[in-house]
Amino acid sequence: MIIQTHQLCKTYHNIQAVKNLDLSIEEGELYALLGVNGAGKTTTLKMLSCLIKPTDGQVEIDGIDLLQDSQKIKQIINISPQETAIAPLLSVEENLQFICEIYGFNQKTAKIKTKEMMEHLQLTPYAKQTAGTLSGGWQRRLSIAMALMSQPKILFLDEPTLGLDVIARRNLWDFIKQLKGQMTIILTTHYLEEAEALSDHIGIMNQGQLKIVGTSEELMQKAQTLSFEDAFLYFTQQGETL
Ligand code: ATP
Image (cartoon, rainbow, N blue to C red; front, side, top):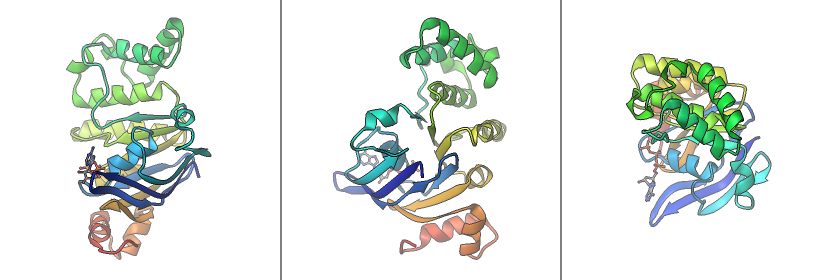
């Protein structure tokens, strides 16, 4: 397992956002975390990506204890957060070059990597465009490109296609599919068909707890339904953790 949590908890004042979470994610898989608003998905992602500290429990990422050595973990992960993390006044090219230099590449290497990444993500026609004037879908693509610059072993995507139109979403799915196998990807989403189309395993969270994990077929089978939406509703509305 590349990610393993044991009884992971996060409490904000008196809100238990994540409760005793035992998560196991295999290297190279795409794992989707689903759940209704407030289920604890973003909090989980933030803990795994070292943005916030757990209140309790253990996390091991690539054999490294997160509480002991988060610096080492930060070197092998990256995140494209919900709020797109681009500099809106810089051009696409400048955003990518800037992030490369932050990761310690010299100017010459940063230029080469930027060119390669723009070609890889079909961003080249937008190179000189101010990032803030790109459409939502292309801003999201740029944000993911920036996260990929550090060549992470683990990539976290928090609602990568939120607010995108059907075509932009499908394009981004194709792109995420291309990344599959090259790294471990953990994504959160509200789009059930997205989880079905992309993931190897799906974990459904509710009220800070993991209710069930499986492939979409396994979840439908366990809920005795042929519709993934019905399976999602079934596991979300069950009182007991399964
Ligand atoms: P959504 O689908 O709406 O993004 P989510 O599953 O990602 O929801 P979280 O954002 O992890 O859920 O929130 C879980 C719970 O923790 C919610 O009750 C939320 O109000 C609470 N919470 C999250 N962040 C904070 C914070 N910084 N301070 C206090 N409470 C918080």
